[in-house]
Length: 324
Ligand code: SF4
Image (cartoon, rainbow, N blue to C red; front, side, top):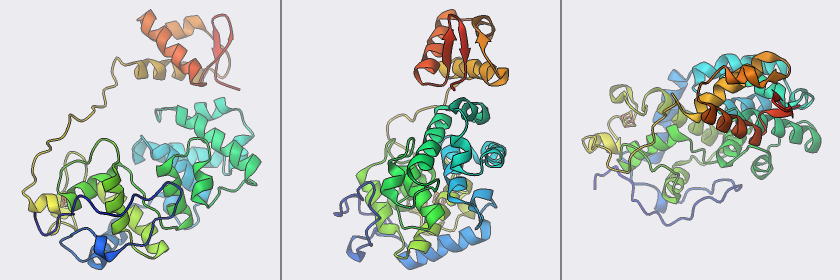
């Protein structure tokens, strides 16, 4: 085993959802090519010099602004999120502003960000924050987790990025960096494993503020340098210590990775149907929906799915609208 690879089975239990990450036990730390403080300093220095200037990272960004960004960024690239986020925050600068409008307006404003159920969930979170939390995004991880649409990742990200708390924040970028730099494999498992969580916990800096910056710094490294298909190892601050690099970049040997096919899928049909409803500002007859996709069976299946998901409301026989 290379000197900088992690011991796969660390004995500490995974951090339970809702709990702050436990302080690291030096005896359980992954075996890295760098001492932990040097690793932290290396990545944090890189982040300070290279971080993108994103509006939800500014010191005056509200917790709501951070939460909106996290919902949007879950499955959409930053470049597409930026204008949608700016328009959203201009229109709904607080959760109460969004909660005062029908959920269909959230779906309309979601535009082409994709996976529009996120818009409904964000609206649901805004209503819960307004009605149950005095209009303020809660700081507590467990309370965040109780909001509609807020899962383990989003709760940790909001607690960390908005409130500077110490949590393990594991998104696809972070998981990929740790898989390569620490474990020495090109890609992580398809679903997050307990071993990954233990590794991430062991690597987390002690101080809450530093841990919060570490979380976003590793994420940024994965987004900008250690990318999925073309890692720029020559520009990486971890180049000399990276386990995958030192092992000669062994090819991925795990199960086939899921593709992102879109053309011809029900997702594409749903997108086309929803675009008609978003642009209509009112009720839409079936005939206008029928015009966007030739396959009647697939079209009906996609429309049924939108109705079942609460993204579309049937108002009369053959007439539809966004939810109110
Ligand atoms: S050296 Fe390459 S593979 Fe390793 S962490 Fe950096 S970019 Fe990723």
